[in-house]
Every structure is written in C-alpha cells, then in structure tokens.
Length: 252
Image (tube, rainbow, N blue to C red):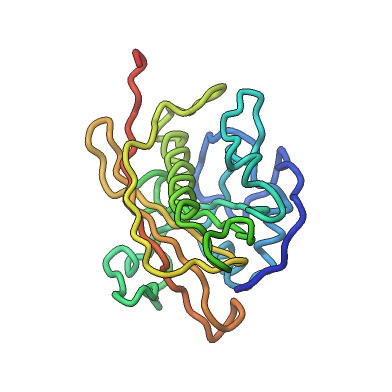
C-alpha cells in the first residue's frame, strides 16, 4: 500500500479521545496526536484495525522531543516527512487464531470468530500494536526499508508495549519524570519478506513470558497486500522478532 511523501506532522496534542475505553491506564501524556489518527483512518485497513472491538489508543512519549535528548531517534531523527511522519499505538485483545497458529508462507492467520473480551493490561491475551507510515528516506535498497530500521521498529514497538505493561493499574511502576527502569537485553529478528516503501506497517507485540526481572516479548511485522487496503487484499507477515527486556536494579 503506497503513500505519497507527507509533511512533518505537528507535535502531539495533550488530549485526544480514545476510540473506545475498555481498560484503565496511568500511562503518561501526551496522548496520540489528531494528525496521526486522522492519517491512519484514511486507510481502510488501518481504520478497520483502529475500530475493532476493545481497541484503546495509547500514548507514544517517544515521539516528543525532550531537552535530555531521550527518545531523539524517533522524536527528531525519524520524525520527518521522508522518514516516519506518522506513528500510532493501540492495544487490543490478541486473537486466539493468531496466538495458536502461524502460516508458513507469511500470510497472517485469519479468524471468523468475534474478538475476545478486553484483557487486562499487560496480560498474555493482550497485544500492543504500533502503526508506522514509512517513507523513502528509510531505504537500504531501492523501494526497500533498511534491515536495521526494521529492527528499530520492533524495538520501539516493544518499548511501547513495556510502557503499557509497566503503567497499567496492575503494574504501577510508571515513570513520572525520567526514563523507564527496564531496557532491551536482546533482540532477535527474522526478516521474512521485503518491506516496501513508501507504505504502512503495523508491528504487533505481546508478552510471551516473565522470568523474574526478565520479560520475554514476541512480535510480528505486518503489511497489507492487494485490494488497496480494502476488500480483496490480505495481511502479510514480513518479519518476526523475539526480545528480552530486563528491569534495571536501582543500584545500577
């Protein structure tokens, strides 16, 4: 699904109504910007994802420039008209079919069953998805996103998922003035198919397991092929990843 190069979006707004509110979160502001939401709602595939039952928009603090230079990679370097002009995160129930099966040809499994009830934040039945609008300034090969960029997208999406987990009502360790006390320890990425640009991609992340201070996350990178984002197309998985995040001790 191709897109024209977009202008640099405005800074995120301090308030934005959620599509639906099914869980309580204490994640810090800012909320998703209206520009990001408006952009993705113009694409039928993205609009369908965002309007699915029990979907909740999430803030993306990493898109906000900070004096400390924290998050400058996604807030400044990759927030331009020819890189990633738009980005939006949301949580939703993880479909049973997706959790139990993976198609060998990279085509995402579909399920005719209705979405399950809204899960508790951070549980294994919830997934956190991040939409990215990708432009040609991210290319390694012609019309193809750089492999390092793909790894960065997985890591960023997992970071949003960890923020959701840590700032939920069941995990009150939410940073109020500084960075999170949890970091990436390892990230393994499988590049399954070429990621074309310009275009739109969604990275879905879910918690696989927890081992003491370690959190194991899994994710998949999905694009829409055919049908111009509407009927007649299908979701295609272009990459998968497994990451380990570790809680940093206060003495470190």
